[in-house]
Image (cartoon, rainbow, N blue to C red; front, side):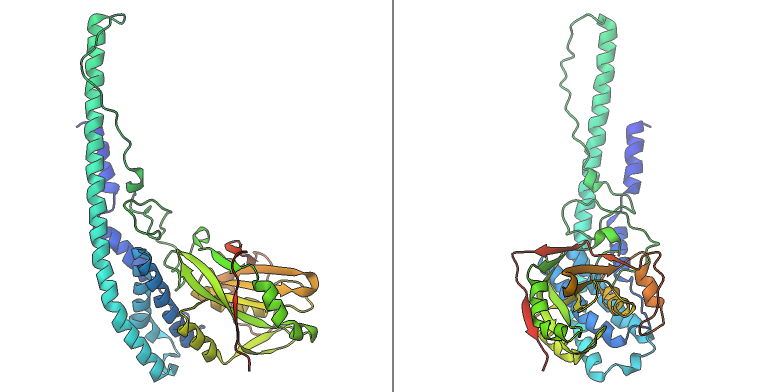
Length: 392
């Protein structure tokens, strides 16, 4: 058998067929696990934001991301949530609203599944045609090279002779359609071709509000308005003067696979010199629902201390980052003119804090690092934040 043909047969065997490709995307949508330490109401709230984010991906044409999030929503509320030990505490109203949302999502997900299979089939057929064309051109070039060699041998190396054949240049195979089973990009906006990071079956389930596997280099950019910190420090000045912490919720929208902070929500709260506790969360949820907003993290002051995350801060932020991997904790330390952006380390800190059962202020090990600077956050100096003060 011609070696070139053998190579291409091996290549075909390495390429995902449409059904296998769809199974991988579906498996990503099924990667949902319940943590009994997270209240079920938190899951129901994240479910609302999950569908909100999926709708944006669908509107922007990112079919795979939309499908994965819709699948996560269905997996969570059709299968997983019932295993939560506090499931019985969920209100009848909340369950009814969730059931209505499930009825809306099911046909959308089924339609997306059909569209993705059609897309994968077209891409697979295109790949096969391109690979066969490459093999044919390779064989033709080899034949002409052999013919040229015979002619050169017959007439001698110094003879001038042309075989009369024109050798057609062989275009490179569409490399971005050459994806082995574990190298397919299931996170980017669907295009005619695919190439992407490695998919590891040993990777832990992704966060609920992430359509991708939760890898550090796959975090979406969080865009923060340039005037956010200055605005927040101004409205918290009275508390700062009294050595009382102030906190706020960072809300915004998904735009072209970036998380754009648009609103700073100041909830009803009780603060001390080293802590701040939000109250009446329903007010936050109502405003977010009315304005299609998603929670991207939180911000708080350290009136007299430096910018860092205390043990209480780490536990507070853990609940945010467990839901959405890009969640950011901004700490403003006015005495030191420092505003820092933090997140838990995904390879250690997030799981460590999630499994820590201690409450209040308590010591944590310093090595390995539990948190780090949130490098995926970028300032948008051209944007201004909208402040919504819900304090009474």
